[in-house]
Image (spheres, rainbow, N blue to C red):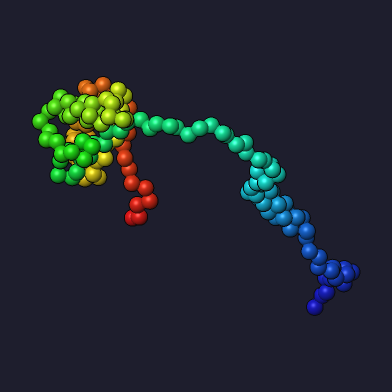
Length: 148
């Protein structure tokens, strides 16, 4: 039997560090990119105070309520719906009778309180009646913090 390794010495095994360094650099770059720095921690600010007076008078509100069965109320007074013009007249009457200090309200805010199961057409009727009555300030009431 011949020994072909006669003249060679046995090599010491060594760890190749180049792939290890490559992996560490990739991890380092990933950590640098994905780290979020808080930009506001170094800002020590004191907010200014405003001494402005609070709004002294709220705009007059007309609350229109629509329930799921299609019944309308204007400022808690039930009204029967026959036409948009009739509902607009009810809105005008509510503005005339219940302004601030008993005066007629010129530019009231119409607040629509519609049941979630009310038909879309009923809400559109109130929007159209407010337009016919000339009241362009309109908002919708919503419930906050509803748990599902």
